[in-house]
Image (cartoon, rainbow, N blue to C red; front, side):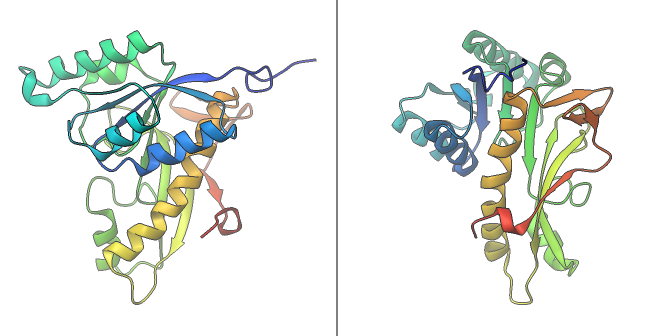
Length: 227
């Protein structure tokens, strides 16, 4: 009989990178503490020493560090410092949870196929910043979030899963962002769980789930979200 890593009691060591409030980090940490997510958060890193996410991590007794870009001569030196910290932690998966810097090729190459990101739009729509404002200005009917593997192409790596949000006539950027966040906090731990259980991988520029290449991202249905 075969067992997944999760069934064998294995907890995947991960590192989480963030720049701000750390709400997605908190969702991941809560899922891990409850036993719903088989991960061991070895390290939380930020490019901003005052990031609220670092406070959240320290309050949980986790190792939390900041590496300010201004302390390094260039972007590559900063990324190499990140690599040293992540590798020293023993993390096998790197999770970007609101990390706002663009990586240099050396970083992407180091963690190729084991680097996840969540983006606040239904990719390939609205890559980059200001996703909620752009969605409202375009008067789209639905918006949402996407989990994807990270490659050198900005917000362009293989798509894994998405969650949709209906855009309301009276939405503001803040109200739309709030509802998208609710989806993110369910979607991201679920996808990380797939990876931790050995169900999810990136091969040949595609996301694979349960041994099958994903022709389209898995869609989280509204019924799965406690709104």
